[in-house]
Length: 145
Image (cartoon, rainbow, N blue to C red; front, side, top):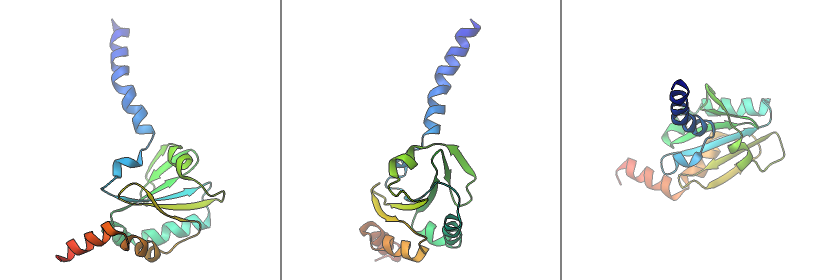
């Protein structure tokens, strides 16, 4: 009887554990834009990019832009990297550049809008976003046009 209870509990908990492990960016579709920094190792380039982004949190928030850091075997969510989980799916699915640093911008529709191979100033990222039709509609709506 005890084994039976444990099997039932395991069958209820295991699917949740497995889905928590692999991140799916599609859950953000139509809600958030995503900036994924893909790195093989933490370097000055990565630190500089994160500092730029941290200094522009208001601009990120205004543009509904979430930041992920994807490594070969783990994923961090946010600018402070507090939420780190073992995961390689985003890195494996999106990494195209053979270099140590690559950053991609994913739009509200879930498609890749831009790829960056070097440190990029947030204002340049914001200009790319602000040209997008959905962002332009957001800005008009926010101004009451």
